[in-house]
Picture 1 (cartoon, rainbow, N blue to C red):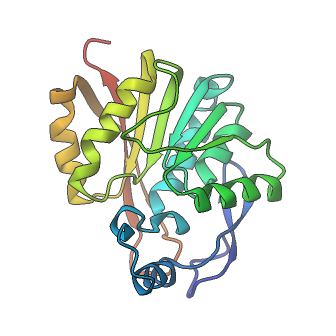
Picture 2: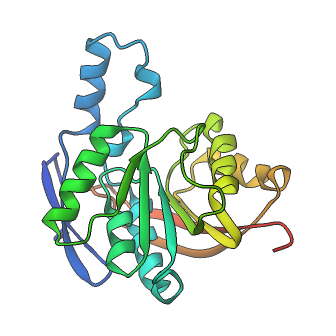
Length: 226
């Protein structure tokens, strides 16, 4: 990215994992949300279009995946809430066998398109509700997600799907920008049999121009006793 955007663009460039990425998306968050509200969708609250934006946590998570390339290469990895696909594509580019899941099929359409635009083997993109996981139990060496919790109601299903999907001895990486919900998330870890430690922190420019850089931390979760 040559510099933060000053307005929405349907296509933009991001530098990650030592290369340039071009990403496409249908519209900005506000426009998609306004259209949903105008349509009077009764389930709008279940389909808030956060996925159409690229959040600072995804940029820092992409850097962390690059630093962890020896660990993830050849491993089965699950990207929770993959959105338009950047971290799933970065993981694939670095040699991981990635499954990217998102609640929204529109997000997966653009994630698939972005794999083609960037000449990266397309990850297995799957529409899935975290509350009803459709991946095999204990099938992933690593699970990761960038800024995947905006409300407390997401904490329990995220931890449960991680417990379901992760292999024994596996690790979860959660990138978060200091939202208050993550304090609740970290306090909840022991109740669900997890331990957590901060393994990385960085400041990064957001996609859109703002007065200061975003502070993002990456937490590594492991099952207690592992």
